Amino acid sequence: MQQTTTPQESVENLTDREIFTRIWVFPREVFKYIEAKKYDEHVYVLLILAGIVRGFDRAIEKDLGDNLSLGAVLGFSIVGGALLGWVSYYIYASLLSYTGKWIGGRADSKGILRVLAYGSLPMILTLVFLVPQVGIYGIALFQADGDITSGGMLENIAFWGSVLLETVLVIWSLVLIIIGISEVQQSSIATAILNLLLPIVIFILPILLIAGLFSVL
Image (cartoon, rainbow, N blue to C red):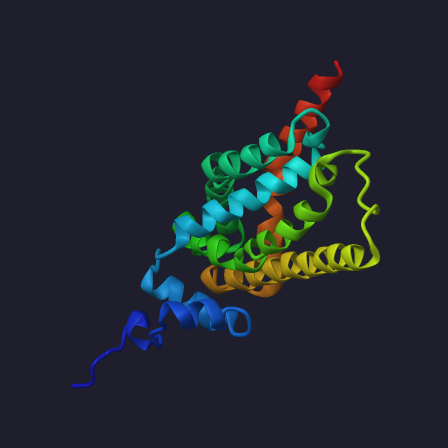
């Protein structure tokens, strides 16, 4: 009698090293493995690191250096991001799973959370470039009127080169997440992009608009 092969058995086994290296160029293969095996290894660590990245992004966007010392800004970004930043990924994953069902998606929130965690790997690497940026410009990096052009030519090249690399890594993370959503939701790339936008348009944007309206009144 011919035995039926389950999806879990038909997926090639990958080591941790292969997951972290292949995802850059063979993301669909990696996401297929992660979904089939329900692979939760490193998910929480990746989410914490991604939360720290978001913490630093907020510190720069909100110009926290205008009112806080460099040590306080770093502490807020690292500790606050590690403790709270990853919560937004849980919420977003739940919303993606919910709205995804409207357009034929099949993944639960845990499967989508794995995609967000592993898809954020390139973005997490931007933390490496933050070190020379802080070393060169210090608190000015987090100030509205901070002078980030006062360094020498080599320092400025290093700074703007790292900014360019950060941008590329963030874009690549977005690409990986789109591919991952497409894989776990068993949908097209276009549908995956729509899935990523629906929670923002339907839930997050209205909340931000209402909060902004109340802040003006």
